[in-house]
Image 1 (cartoon, rainbow, N blue to C red):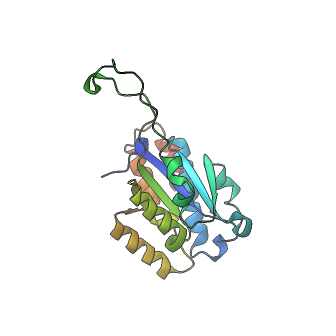
Image 2: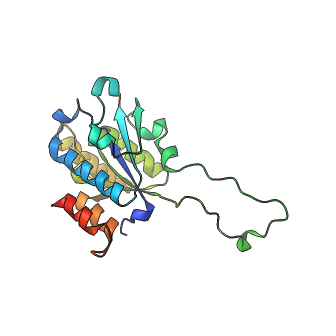
Image 3: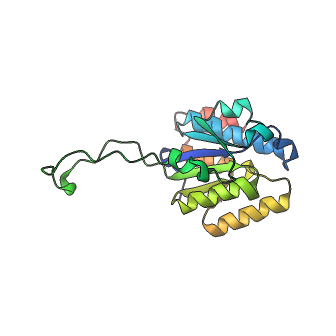
Amino acid sequence: MLIDAQESQLVLVDYQTRLMPAIHEGPLVLENALRLARAARLLQVPAFGTEQNPSKLGENPPELKALCQKTLAKMHFSACEEGLSEWLRPPAKPVQGNARSLPKHLQKPAQGEADRSAIVVAGCEAHVCLLQTALDLLEDEFDVWVVTDACSSRTERNRDAAFDRLAGAGAELVTTEMVLFEWLRTAEHPQFKAVHELIK
């Protein structure tokens, strides 16, 4: 199954200024997060950020924060514990009509927001906040795609253990380029050149 841009949302977890210097391959991980966020902007994929205890760990870099529609400050390690799932799945609109309405099978489908249940997620630390957020998203019945080259921890062992556990729980493990090219699908996409420039 390919990742569909029309069904996707991007979640970027805790790329915070005081945390990133301690993260294994931190600059590369942040660079890939920025690629994802810039491509999401070009392809109209909603993007959200999170920040763990920002008063102690600092905020996400301004250039990343500017590419996110909203950023959730949190104290729980899982962003879902503090409302992320509600951001990703807005409440359903109330049913219109009355007792004399047409039977359900004859009614036109409601014009609402498209169901964006494919969550592309990346962040730090992979074995703590990213892991707990992704596991909770799976529990909340989202399809979860973890972008491995945009995730890390202070040690490779912790990062790799997180990937093993996430794959076992049903998350798909992907790379930044896999996401971008699946969002595009074709070299004829109007944004192909702009997205391709992010990879060069």
